[in-house]
Image 1 (spheres, one colour):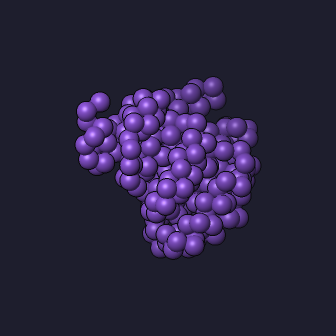
Image 2 (spheres, one colour; image 1 turned 45 degrees about the horizontal axis):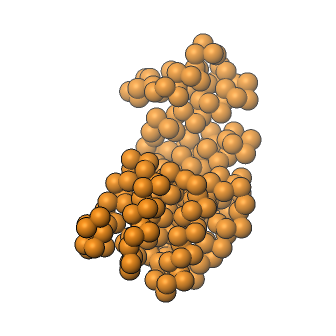
Amino acid sequence: RHFLHGSNLLIAHFISICGSLRYSDYASRVFAHIQNPNVLVFNAIIKCYSLVGPPLQSLSFFSSMKSRGIWADEYTYAPLLKSCASLPDLRFGKCVHGEVIRTGLHRLGSIRIGVVELYASSGRMGDAQRVFDEMPERNVVVWNLMIRGFCDSGDVERGLGLFRKMSERSVVSWNSMISSLSKCGRDREALELFCGMIDQGFDPDEATVVTVLPIS
């Protein structure tokens, strides 16, 4: 335990490793022995639980952070929004979104992506679309979030429309559309899209195969 008396940077790095290995309980025990955790340490433990769950733990640590008078930053809110996106109650996420707006951090790319994920995962596609439209730059992650959000909400045509507009796609993009078309009985289109995926040099993964095999 002697390393717990070292720098917060070292401790934060160790907790981050625990999160990547899904050892959230161990990360929490390490955190409990730290006398004066700073924003780096809190960010690490919040991100740990955003990856591993349960998501409410991220909110609990965030509350503890605020009670200590520690200011949150971009690296606090991005994983916190991800945790909120996993919760059935949108109120938590809306509170965090409101706080992000008040701090002015809502203009940052990582925060915008987190907000899009928050609303898309809750089926609030109008809110997700507004944030998406305001983004000056959009990476493949946020495009995928929007596509999946529309498809999961039953609006496959809107999802397909966005998919066709993408200048850069990933395997996740293809899988989302192939799966969504298959689920609504549009097997022929799903197979055509699968062929297009192969033609464009994408290698199918396990998720692709699971979707395509039953309709082949």
